[in-house]
Length: 239
Image (cartoon, rainbow, N blue to C red):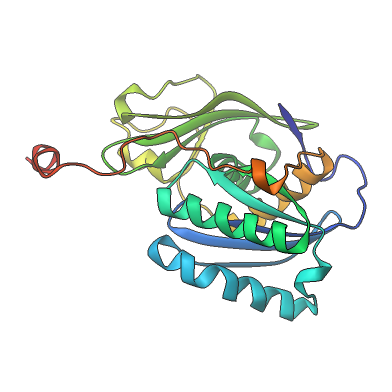
């Protein structure tokens, strides 16, 4: 699927709340039309479940908006941390049902690529994303940035760093780059600069693409069934 960039065509002045806590950062954005109006980031992880709604309420209040002013909710669908994905999806579903709104699922790895593109400017066309998945593995995906938007070349997956497919000429992005056996062969952006802003831009693009789903059909994307190592496995990795 090609996801349009937010600047490709005018949209109605929809007001969206976008949220993502797939990784170590809790990211929120409010958008109106094509503009990202406000963003917020905090440490995520275990704190995301208790901070997500209060932080969203603070953002709304700062704009003079209420929950009823929102036209839709976007959420990071994953892949990522199990608890974070469940938190974002459950909160988004609850808001959608309570407000009678629809949802926009956002690829959480694409947020990393979008942020890298903002740092790189027009030079970035192909991007391999590698995010630390713990347990000695990486979440990874590959994208192409076209004039009309992002195209997914390789769907999000999970694998050992040494097995990550490499494509000549790609830019690389994500905190998992430090786990690769060798330095990436192309330009790299291991640190995200503005995850919340990237999330907001992708939410606008998803709304323009009419990528809405009903609350009942919103699901996290898991690429890992096993969420923890045994004691013996941890000792083997440490040895």
